Image (cartoon, rainbow, N blue to C red):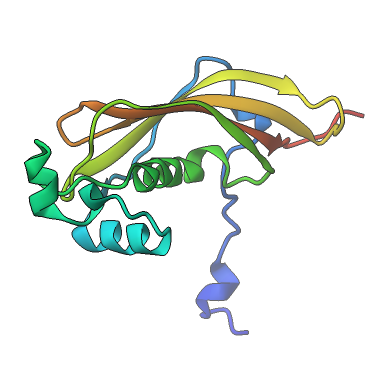
Amino acid sequence: MSDDDFRARARLWPKGNRFEDFGEGRVFDHHWGRTITAGDNAAFTTRTLSFCPLYFNEPYAQAQGHPRTVVNPLLVFNTVFGLTVEDLSEGGGPFLGVDKCHFLAPVYVGDTLTARSTVVSARESKGNAAMGIVAWHTQGFNQHGEQVIDYVRTNLVRKRRTAS
């Protein structure tokens, strides 16, 4: 590899946060948003065998009082969850679960979702000195700033250093 090869000049850029970065009360405004398309909704709804016509039949959704097709709530959850990964869990560690998940308002095809998470607890793992256990309260919003979902997520999170 020659010196003018970009790989020779490249620096390893660590990904994700570690346990030490998650002090209680820290807020993460996740920087990406995601617009949900009709294709996203149809593909997700079909692949998950969800047969609720609100998610794929616009005249039916309108007859039920919605302005357009409703986005499958599990797609809303997965999209908001995905928006948080870079900040919360990209550094590695097993997913432990979601609690207190509330769908607060319908999401429609064409809406753009954003997310914000707040650290609600962080403690040392009793069974693994290289890890901590962190819980975050995540809120998802549409493009109008209306909250559409919230939940508490818990993960094991790698530490930067281990106790000796």
